[in-house]
Image 1: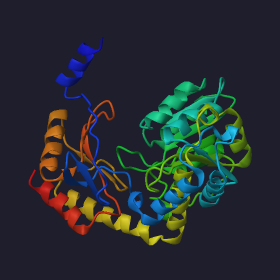
Image 2 (image 1 turned 45 degrees about the vertical axis):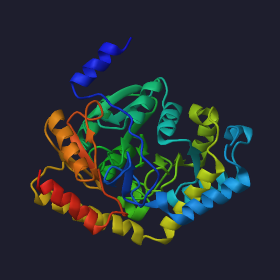
Image 3 (image 1 turned 120 degrees about the horizontal axis):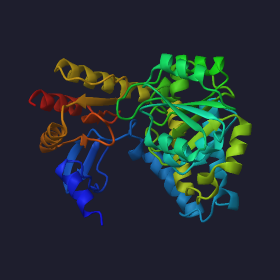
Length: 377
């Protein structure tokens, strides 16, 4: 039935295939088909996925609680660890309460329809993540798209629209471009027009604001207007996601968020891993500093070679490469040199690119190998 469509994807170099990795080797590396590569495609920004203390806490929780949760949170599938994690997250993010979800995708497609309904208006950045787009679609609110990071355009649009509620939604760090939303300007507009601000801080948590995220980066104090979504699966090296906001909103999610109500709870061992990751991050701010030192080394080297890196401001560094075939060719050359950084193509992005993500786990030698390889392309 789908043969012709698959052939069309193949002809346009857009066919995607799954390539699974081998057993874990060490931070900053990946094993594919028995070959070890320097991994510049991981969102394990702090190298926590291999942290011995995090792994030990997960093992201990599995011994104590078993593996599967066996039920949703509302049917006692959670544990005391789930509640503990939510308290730690709320304290970490400076909010009254928090709620754990099974993934960032689930959090967005559950929370956005819970916030916005018929008669409301959502204002969404044009480059927001697919999970935000899908969450907006699932809501019955009117969707208005503003130009990427353009606070002036957002202001024009928000002045024109009338709705029972106005909700502005944006990624904080855009995962394919590595740039940061102008949250100060956006927050100011939300205050002026009594709008809710919903931020997806998946790539900001553990990276910006000494690890606390985008609000800390911009020195914005959390209040009842702001809803923060974040993930444990990136910089924190675990799995799952959370919503952090005022107590009433979290209680509303418990009663209305379909992805929370109708999902089996995350296993206790995953929750234990997230707890330990947050504790380490709060004790060791130098971990985040090392990440940014590596970022500066890589971006300086790439820019020094004359490559364009869009408007990257974070450890996500996209390389402008030209057309799709050229992008694939560059990815192949990198792979031949034991560097894993696959081509990113439409429909994920409009403009093809190689997206490098540098982590704390990379050594100076790793970064120099990448720069030297790029210098020969």
